[in-house]
Length: 202
Image (cartoon, rainbow, N blue to C red):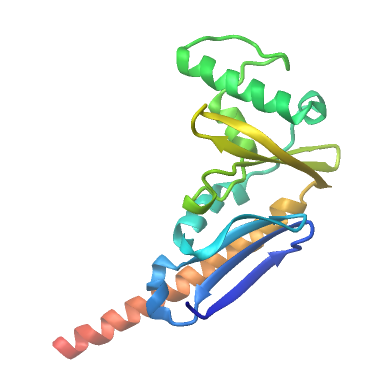
């Protein structure tokens, strides 16, 4: 059992992110930052807080998410039942894969590039089975939690929660900034160690 340091961002009882790293640097392997990670949505943990995540991968996944200008969607999408959104999303992606160009019931041709803009999951091993989607409209945010049914190859609705627009992205940006700084710190340490060893060998 490893003794870990815990780093929390946001509010676990609304939306939060937690990272863990072993106190012993040798155990998290420098810039790999091997540790734990999870999302918190209204007190529910999404992911597994165990020593199985590469936080360097988490940083790479979060970078494009935190750069998105917004997660705004049309009112029709925001007001639709979660199951309907997932069903239309699945149909759109099937149509795209089959080369079928057809408007969905929201009045547009849905594509992977469109729908992926609303996916905010920390898509590393620990969260591969629980995709999370964020839709915003008129100052409100709607988080939809799903579960991947591997047998049927579809996303199944689990729960949804209402927040303020921008609230989730603020937390994601804070977590990403911390990861970036921590990664740079470890990278600087590695370069310093390499430089010292090279001088010794010279």
